[in-house]
Length: 564
Ligand code: G16
Image (cartoon, rainbow, N blue to C red):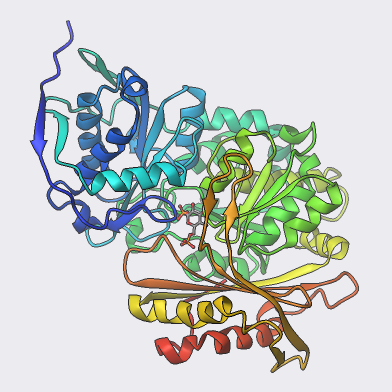
């Protein structure tokens, strides 16, 4: 006989500021631990979901293992039980990467998932925490749902909670109450099985075994350590000594688990020394990826374009691609691949949630974002490990004859540029800027956009002497072609007559002040200069972008914190 649930109602009141950003609600851990901050948000999710869909349904819960993950999971069990959920699937020790959660939701036909992560933001007692709701397709809830959850947080008065629900997260198996179960599942198995149906692991094993190819992976002390150990080592034969920072840590060992050139210094310096042929990193929750060749950085915008143009190397795409998509600030390299393949192409706002509808409507196979996100319709989240294996598969495809000279990652990207031309691309991040100053920078540009007075302005490039003329300016708006919903104010866009673009956005994933992002994209055709250094090549465009926004004058910042 299983135990009856002891359910009670807690009185609460609305807490200001619980508006989900680009990808869920992210705040300091200290805020999440105060009073009913977490409880209120979780109950607000249930207040939005139709009770008949919740009754007896399966919910997936897990996170990237950051500080407060385990306590938050127990609170979610108790609230889920009291709101009628029938079964919660949770990763062992509370660990499930964001892509693995998406895979489990789909495989188990769950109602949805609650994901506990602040992604690439630092963790620990003074770091960030985050929560987001994913729907039954395994992807992030669309804006209509996140807006409804936010509206609930503004009027919530009570929380339903089961007093006697607590489950041991360390042991696989089921704990049961009357009408409610918690099942602790292996964090890796279901996700790894899915990847085995997508890629040719045998071919990759042969690549990994080559003496002239050394691979290295940095999990940045995030959740992917658990996946890397099982998938790269046990399934693909990578030596354990080539995996670094693969033990998940509650504070990411004091690091900033953001796989980019600034925050993954250990891997970047090894790659610059030429120690490995391929080096990759993933973020806290395993959905972002960075791919490096020997002394060579693969820009994320190029990465998705190269994967798409080499789709035939990946068994999952053997029937061809349905369509391609990128977020608006991502470079236009992918557009050229779609054009060449004569398949549909979509430009969506920043945020993986915008790809879900297109995938569900069978019009999208591969998509990516400049923010180190790459993925496909195998799930509804971006997928760091998938992207790394996609590159391994492409390398193995180009190197089937072991007697020939090794075709490197750099060779493959260079071949791509020679075929399509190159989009020189860079992003400048100014982090933790005073919120008002961030708004002032955006206002400076948006006024010129509103009055259209920027159109027709001409500049002479400070370093290349080239003439740049503004052709069009707007604040990007997206109409979802499937559900026809409209998302406005998605980034200030300045387009030049030669196709170059400068884009300004405020990040929606930070927790302190404003992070200003400025994106630069300049196309060089196949007959142009394809092999310049990126910052040198973009110097004139960057200068124009900083001048137009008065960014340095308004914020007092001479340099960005991160340059990609
Ligand atoms: C999230 C979203 C991505 C987005 C990124 C950056 O990623 O899922 O789609 O590109 O944030 O957003 P922002 O520029 O607003 O900071 P993640 O990995 O943080 O969940």
